[in-house]
Image (tube, rainbow, N blue to C red):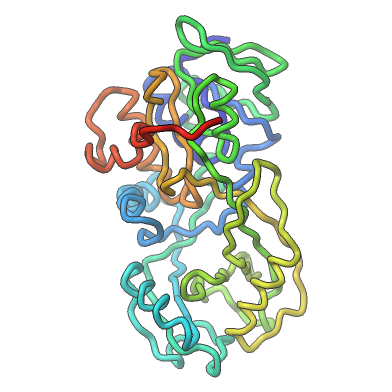
Length: 364
C-alpha cells in the first residue's frame, strides 16, 4: 500500500493528527492494539481545563477550547474543579490559586459542593467552574471518522515490525503488509522513542510516567453527579465523579518502560490514604483499578514537528497527560507545519513545541 502520511499510533495524538493531515493527502494510521485509544488515551481522567499545564500548554488548551465546545456538537459537559489543602499545604495551595485562577472558598462553601470533605482536615479550598468533562471516546471516533471520510485508512491490531528509509520516504513492515509512505508520523505515545530508533532517528529522551486510578462506589451512597473534580493541593491526589462512581488517583508520576501499565497496589493504597485523610467517608471497597503511562519530553512540553535531521520524519508525541485537552490545536499545528503555512497559534508558540529545541538529542 502507498500513502502520503503514515501515522504510527492510534491514541488521541495519532487520530487527531491523522484527521488533520487527511485534508492534505492520503493517510494510513496503524495501531498495534485491537482498538483505538487503548493505552494512555483509554485511561484518561477526561477533564478539560484551560489552566492545566505549563504556560505554552495552557495556550494550546485555550486554542482548543472552541473546537471542543462546538465541533460535531461539542464534547464538553459541566464539571468544575476544586482544590483543597491541609494547614501544611499553604504554599502549594497558594501556587494552585494563582496558576489555576481559583476563587477562594470557606470550608463550609467547599462542603456544600462536596459534602464528604472533612472540616477537621480541610484548611483551604478554592474553586473555578471553567472545567468540563470531556467525552474522550466521541473525540477519538470523530477524528477517526474524518480520516476515513477523506479516503484514509485506520488499521487496528497492526503492529509495526520494521521501518526502512527509502529515497522517497519510508517502507514500513507490519507482518501482514508493507506500507510505503512519503512522511512518517510518530504518534506512538510511550513507544515514541522506540519508533524513532526503528526508523534510524535519534530518540529525544521521552519518559513514560505511570499514573494509577481506582474506581470506588459513590461515597455513602450519595448522588455525586454534580460534585466537582477535587484535587489535593500540589496534586497529592484527585477524585472525579464518573457514571455514578468516584475515580480516585494517587496522582503519581513514576518512570516506567513502555508497557501495558497496571496499578501498583502500594502506590494506590498510599494515594487512597491521602484522599481518605480529607474526607469523612472511608474507602470500603475498590471496584476496579488501572494505570496508564503519561509520556513526557525532557522539558515536559509536547513535541510537534519534523525531525531536524530528517525532513520526512514527523514527531507528534510527548502529550504528558494533556493529549485530549490539546488535541485540536496540536493537530492543527501539525497540519500547518506540514502544509508550510503560518501556524494558527503563532510562530513563537509553535517554536516551543518544535523538536529543533533539543540541540543535542540524548543517546539511544
